[in-house]
Image (cartoon, rainbow, N blue to C red; front, side, top):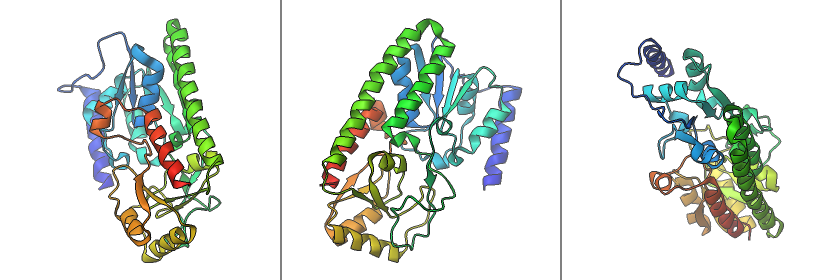
Length: 315
């Protein structure tokens, strides 16, 4: 299947190079900078810094899973015509290199999120282990969810700001002002999380789901227990893993079991039914719903909601 998809993508790219016929040019005719992003966090960072000086386009459709995403012809053309293309730079975006190698992006500045922060490995331990909250295992790849750390968000926003200034030196003060204002909000968010953890009764969070928060838990000194040790896992956890999770929740009197946005919630439901813990969503910000996107939800808002839920889970 992957071979077929790869061949199809190559054909699409070749068609774009040779003609471009029948494909809508998604780049605006205005003088605004064109920014194309693959995931919601970078989309939001870009619009906070660029303001009204840029048109920012998110490739992922609302609610779409990035690991299953394949670019359309219009998406490829949008990347080709963009001034700035922001991708994660992870294995879940294997299509990116093929697109960048196949079309002329000589006028496009490419930002890879993972190339600008210190990376943490993504666990691939056996799910029949006691539980998965140890950060010192032999992992097979890096965790791509770098934006779950507000401190990383500051770093990434700085790279976006600097890139905008390279393109549009005339509006340097505008981008600097937007960046400084945004950093204040991110620093306030970081302080809120630190205050919550510093005043908490416990330091362990439980996810009846995958765990894309290694950067987050490292920043705030949190331990985690999760049904999956890797976000790339597609199989259900074994019965021993579920039993261990349930026993740990009961033993530590864990009050909240988290699940991710767009999750089936089945595992979290099973744990909650066995332990009477409360089920709550903890948003990874990877992507958002159509309603949230329409309402202009931001990374800050989603993380502030996470902060309220974290406080309940740790007390």
